[in-house]
Image 1 (cartoon, rainbow, N blue to C red):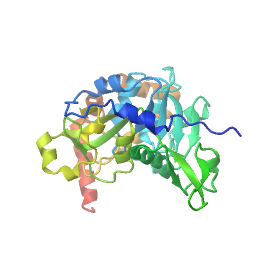
Image 2 (cartoon, rainbow, N blue to C red; image 1 turned 120 degrees about the vertical axis):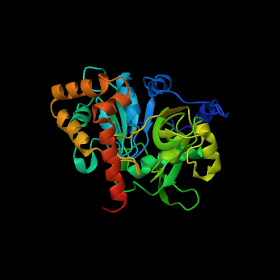
Image 3 (cartoon, rainbow, N blue to C red; image 1 turned 45 degrees about the vertical axis):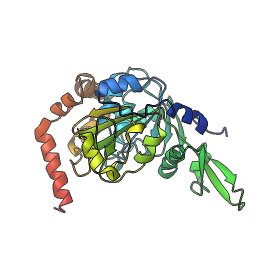
Image 4 (cartoon, helix red, strand yellow; image 1 turned 90 degrees about the horizontal axis):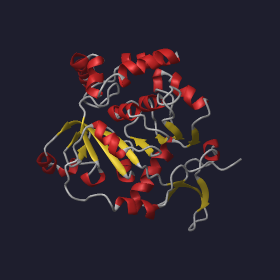
Length: 330
């Protein structure tokens, strides 16, 4: 069996050289999502998406990548659910090939909601190159990159078929002789992360589990932040210990209220299960799905218009109320 390929180089010195070119000053980075995607997402890039499942996902960036018809991207499929569903819509729809390579930990499924029919068609078509990881080891690839090293040694994957289908390699500990697995660093070209609050320089804070996003922000060469709301820089400085992603990691800040919709935003709004179901239903028939995409993404100018089309403020308020009641245990 041919060894699975690494889609990105884990070389830490080359990545450090790229990071050295990023500005360290307090630069105003506020722009629209369309501007951010146009400037920082290029054909052939390796893309990583923040959040987890349908929680705290940068939906607006995924929409815009699809709308701008970016091509031949590689993707980190780290519990990628609706985000993968959106990006996969750029394949097999007569618009070329948005996804060309995927590091797979969890894709196609939308957890308890079932499997995405279109995402499944895309991967079963054989047009997308894939290699396998576990969720844990794919997250550790960001950890290695955030540390500035080319790999981290772990016990995970030993004795599994996943290791056979992964570029990870068995190694021997030079100190103890124990068998370990070397997990290579992952330095994405660009990452998109949605947060609760950010200032115009890119300092970010969010609620709920961070999953891998703190490491991801430090691993990616370019970072697009979407936020529920912009807050004054002085507000960030009053509680600096709450800043999880510092400005020096960030290249673009886009204020996108309800930016994780139809996903969940912890403490803000619940996921729109009806809309997610409508996506899944439309995907069953390619012609119906093409019309669905025309209506909801290609036929709208931005994410705000998409929100209006999906019920607007009234629908968002209902989702806020549901999230509040769940927090209260009702």
